[in-house]
Length: 253
Ligand code: PEP
Image (cartoon, rainbow, N blue to C red; front, side, top):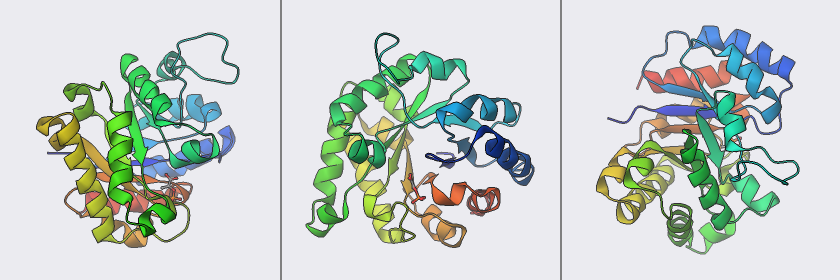
């Protein structure tokens, strides 16, 4: 039985003060939620504040990125150990904004996944196709190649514990989510690939999130799909009320 996991990705939003304000209201709204795992993904500078603010709540701390080396001359980077020291549970790896804006390649993403596991955290690996790739019928080949390269060397035990977020790039931040059928098809395809690459057990255990313009009004139909085990939420996670609504709608399914 896979427990649904709804995580926020605040991207480059919220100061520490704003994160505190969010928590004051959000904690109250989700205090009785027990059947959905909740994650919060603040910026690096707010990780400590959020870590303190969620103590004793069961809410998980998610970092948005990491570097794969432990230390050294890597100006501007943050190591897995530094994230782990702050109480980080999950690290988002390979988000399309990192791939597209910062030129992150599968080779780097694969190293990050290994580094996250080595430091006792779990990756949330993001995969997804562009609008152009979708229009030319390449969705499955893109997902297949991303998973093959990103999961290289990942064991069955590790893969079963990780999270994969299927995020069609054309649905991110656009207000236009994928249809429930397309979101389900992407997640099912990703699960089947994990079975082929790492093994059946890992494929059954891995949690597949859908991401791309999840809002309270479409949460029910998206989260009730059989291969969708939760969501990665950007814009709608900035507001405590709409993020809590998505979580409580999922809990009631
Ligand atoms: C995201 O960036 O991971 C995301 C899903 O954003 P949004 O919910 O705003 O589409």
